Image 1 (cartoon, rainbow, N blue to C red):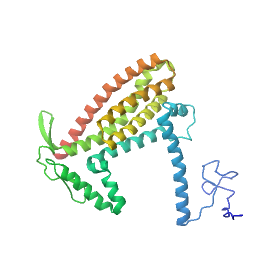
Image 2 (cartoon, one colour; image 1 turned 135 degrees about the horizontal axis):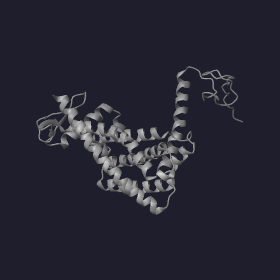
Image 3 (cartoon, rainbow, N blue to C red; image 1 turned 180 degrees about the horizontal axis):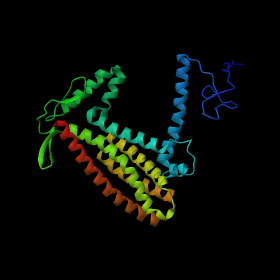
Image 4 (cartoon, rainbow, N blue to C red; image 1 turned 45 degrees about the vertical axis):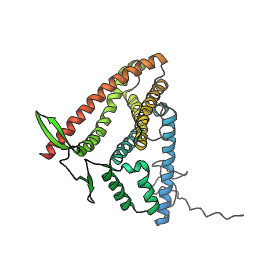
Length: 306
C-alpha cells in the first residue's frame, strides 16, 4: 500500500482577510485555504497551480468562442461569468497578439519558414538567432536595406526611394520614413479599433431597438465578435497566404451571421437584412477611422521630425 504525502494543515481563518474558514476557499475574498511556506519550491508550486487554473478558463473560453458563436455573450448576459474570461480581456488579448504578430512578421520574415525557431531549438542562442533572422531580412531587401545596431532597426539608406515616402499635408509635401509611418499607423490603428467597439455596439442598438436589450449587451457582443476576427487574422499573418485572407473573410461573415441569429433570436430573413445593414454602416465607419488614423499618423510624424 503506497504512502500518501501528509496534507498541509489548513487554517481556521483566512490569512488574507481574517474571515472564518469552513471550506476550501474563503467566502469573503476567495483565497484558497492552504498554509503557504515562503520557499522557492512552494512559490513555484503555487505559480503553476494558478497558471493551470487560469489556463482552464482560457481554453474553455476559446473553445466556446470558436465553436459556439453568440454563446459567450448569452452566458455573460445571463450572469454566468466566473467560468469564462471577461469580454474585455478576450478582446485585448486577441488584438494585442494580432498587432504583435503583425510587427514580428515585418521585422522577422524568416519566422514564417521556422528558421528563427529552428535555430533557437538547435543552438539555444536567442541573440544569434535574432541576428541571423535580421541578416536574412537585410539580404532579402534590395532598395531598402536595414541594419541592426543592438538597440533596434535603423534604415541604412534613409534617402532610398523605397524607404522614404512623401506625405501631402497642409498644402506641402513632407518626406518621412516608410517604416516609421507603417509602425506608427499600426499602433494608432490598434487604438482606433478599440474606439470602434462602442460605435459597432451603437449600430447594433439601433438595428435591434425593438429587442429592448441594454447597450452594454450589444457592446459585449461586439467584443466577442471582434476577438474572434482578430484571432483569425493572426493565422493570415503566420501563414502569409493571400488565400487565407479570403478564408478569414468568409469565416467571419458566417460567424457573424450565426452569432447574430443565436444571440438576438430573430428569423433568418431579419438576421440577413440586419447583417447587411450592419456591414454597410460598419464598413463606412471603418473607412473613416482608417482615414483619420492616417491623418493622425502623418501629423505626428511631421511634427516629430520638424
